[in-house]
Length: 185
Image (cartoon, rainbow, N blue to C red; front, side, top):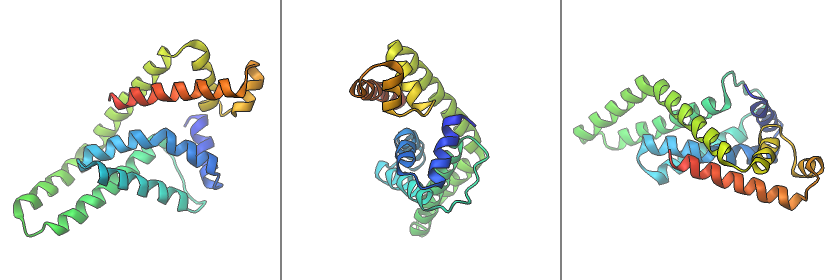
């Protein structure tokens, strides 16, 4: 598990709102992509992802994550989507054709979940790496110090002898490029 993931988990366990905010900003869009692919309904997918983040925030300090944070969150979202599909399945019980489609989708999800997760994870990692490589050197360096080394904007400012507003601007630009890269998946 990467250092930044460990820091996010520790922050989450200690109810650090900053860590939770960083976790939310980092993983919301990729998780929404997964949920939308499963549910085929953006509004329902947004609800499922938000439910996962609410559950994470409310979780007691006994949470144990033994895999990558991304895989853990993806599994949580996938399970929540399956719950939505099951709830939907109960509502349409009288329509045999739709019932069979939901069962088929649940079976497909259960058997192909690992493959989907690996493909999404690989695609996401490649997209992020490519987006990072395209960033100007200083912008990339600032982003890596912030997101991978966990430094604050002030610490980065002092280390690189630049203003805090420059640090914020560079991080904003980097995040914009990351979002664009992820949205093209």
